Length: 380
Image 1 (cartoon, rainbow, N blue to C red):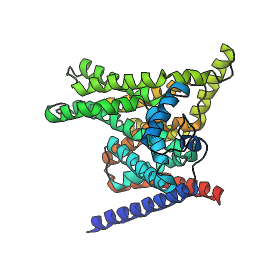
Image 2 (cartoon, rainbow, N blue to C red; image 1 turned 60 degrees about the vertical axis):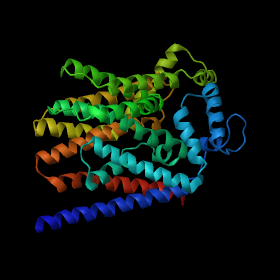
Image 3 (cartoon, one colour; image 1 turned 90 degrees about the horizontal axis):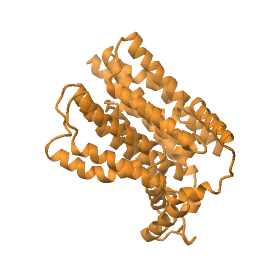
Image 4 (spheres, rainbow, N blue to C red; image 1 turned 135 degrees about the vertical axis):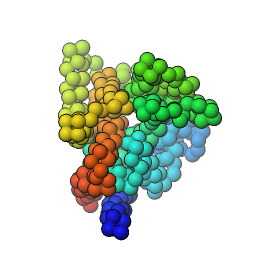
């Protein structure tokens, strides 16, 4: 009876915390209006006329691909969302944020309300620019939305890796489920590769790495959908990066010498890590130290794969002329997955259960609330 009361207490506390987060987020969304790129994408890019239907979106994205850039998938969705109006977009954004938080919980093998509140809070607390990556419409679609299908893609590979690591039969490798995933993987993998310039290629590298590890280390055959996914990711990435519009856009940037370019890239990358990814890195490193030194446990191959994935997604930005803070969102999400997974394993190892999940997340929740209130304060 006493145990049930404690569980109810933690559950009620989590419900209140989640309600506070969602209310504050919705208020912030309502305060934000379409701005900057949103205004441009609310028109047919080829004609300049207001969007009137899907045909305008298709015409816009064909023009965009050949004249401005290759992010056709996210920008098509952006234009469709903008057509729903401010309120419609706000509701869709909230749904996609909720979905992203849930997918992180699945990746972290911790599908409960405590973890859900924690990862939702971390998406805000560890985010270097919540306004431009989560509440600005173009940023939300490019980063929150795309992270959903990217995590869905990555989860399938990590799930197979974990099954073999636990010496289980691969639950996604046989029968009808194998055929179904193979079919679904075609659009999912292409969308993943065609998402943004660092997470798309990094996801493809992860897929190839997992396939090779399964073949070499476990001496197993990778299912067809894993090859389909790797190929689709590579195709999507190539189509995005090789878009003629990217080269047209580069021509508008002021040319500088090679030495200046290298210096600026190095400064941009150091700034990106020191300023943008520092919070999630500190959280992740502290948890790894507790897991390895205090509990004397070894990170498994899924941890290592995700850490390398995070690193590759960061280093991929070296190829970009600059590294804006919002571009670190996908890399941050991977760090949150790793952190949530470690918190779950540490709490299980110490048999802390609800307390082990709630206490570290309460600190992050407090930081997230403060950040949201401060951002809202700037509007009023």
